Image 1 (cartoon, rainbow, N blue to C red):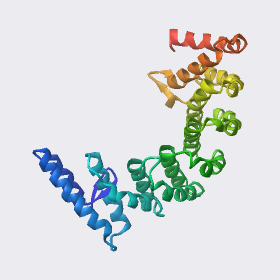
Image 2: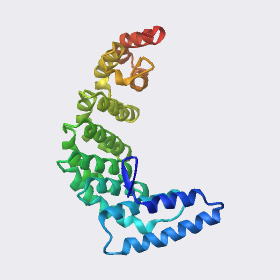
Image 3: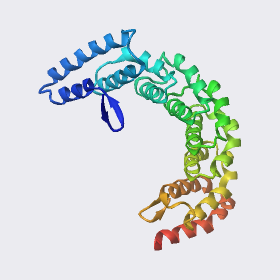
Image 4: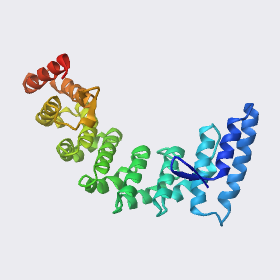
Length: 287
């Protein structure tokens, strides 16, 4: 096995990539890929194939689909690999599912149980892998099964998990806007999270709600004002600075929310004036 970027891949994989890269015509490339498809079908069907080998074969199947060829024969193996206990194999399985499947794919029925199980795991890496998958493949039918589970994850000690849950709630709201009544109780919690990355992710959800269900986001204006004020006063970690500008993307998103909520609402706009003036002065004069 050879190492590439910290991953172990066989010489066969490198030879495949090399031969495709050196192909002198599309016909020659297609011939190489067709031969690889025949080989992979044989390897997948071999009962002696190990889980680690399945992991690499899925990576090769991804490569095949990236080049425009059909690798649907490998899709079921992606679902099976996501069920494995080994975290590297599980993550590869979920990644393959993200790339191979779509939200209405027939194999989603087999994947949902694995996702539910991993969302309840004590291992945050398993939770993160499942959340990454469901954020991509979520559909209407999955929401009733997933929503009760992710509510508990809003209190997870790992900020990466809380951020992913926030992104998933946003996806759920886009698919099923009527969920706003259930999501509403978590908006303040997400916006006031101790980690700025979670707070930043919540702004996308709040922005969508402001456009469609303004009444649920009006109450958040004092917190948004406070956050923007903290940014202007350089109270966020320097990691969020861009060319010495404090958290510019968060500032832009908050200002966009203010534009929606303050339109034709003088009373609400008056709550924003002071911090808006401070933001403009900061933009004019920099540090």
